[in-house]
Length: 568
Image (cartoon, rainbow, N blue to C red; front, side, top):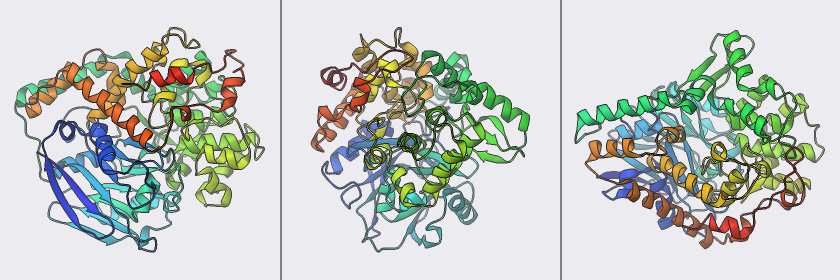
């Protein structure tokens, strides 16, 4: 049996329920999306009392399996107006597992003038504490105060001051293994949803006593070792172990899909100044608190995260990911890793998604509020976000809103969510994925780039995107790190064997993929019910009319083709 803890944020009522269905067994996005679909009215106000927020662990959470403790957070997105699942690493999933929880649901909403609350979940009781002392503070200060009060081993979840103001490009920050709330479920505006419940933080104490029970412990141990060996043997995982996701800078530059100058170009002159090797060398040279390898959760055999230090060796930001290096770097024509790290840190502290705000700043630069390549101006715009100025609030509402307010037509988003760090005219497989995701533009939804023989051609990309939609969704369905997919995408048996050894549940690859596809159908149906039509899954018109200079390509995917990629 798997437990869901339901917390009514208006009344303080708490109820625990138990279920034994396959969706609760798997957890992750399989569970969050089904709960959203069943319990959240599709047409509701995302920031109103009828929306709910679900925090779900995966099927192997709390065990020794590498990279298996990601947390899926689901609800209706105020950014896209549709269904949303955003996931994060860190230790929250582990702490939930130790408390015997597969899911925590935040329901209802208090009056607008209600005070901020901290929800504390422990072995013996659940408390609502006054959270007013956290109000207005940045995420790093909130993290320190929570760690001081509840201990660094507690699993803490919090939001930034931008979310407190219900801005749309805000995320939810979760504790890393060092007790710092730096692991983000960043996309879709779910930070604002949490704020609408007047919950400024949630704490899962490190006093849980629930140990994983195994039907076949020896086979589970062997299976866990096998997964580690597969990860270490895979060349993609090994590349990320050394360089992290920053390795994608050179790859995307070579393929001419590195977003540059508000997605006008796919190549940036001087990209080597912000690539993986430069970051690696900088971290090594500065030493101190810097780390080229870092785990966002335990256990993890990949350790693709990093700790980027300032010139004195003190922590500046952890982590810097490729998506941020592109959206807050090349997209703004910035060639200074220190500036990108500073912007990343401000975004983390303010509680905003680096992709959507990076894209919004690109729009602002195109509107003439700053010059592309102006490092000081870019940091200043992030300070506007931190200080919640009128311009900062516009930028923290995402690139779609920013483009409308600032009068920019070339707005890089789908369904209101910023395009990730792959210029879509140069990679039609990724473009098809952006146009197919029920979550808004999302690279993890179906990552095709490594398997596109001719990236600029749309031929065969419906089938390719659908293939990798299933592969990527498998990991979300289980609460696994997306990078595990490279080691098991052609054979899910190692993970399915672990489920059998743990729970005694036998699920074939065909059955598992059927569960994944049914989840996709549910997500798309929610969006349809919410009033999102298939004509809404489009890029801005400029992507269809204007050539990307380096590839000579326009967007040529039709509505009919993207609709095929959304049909399951």
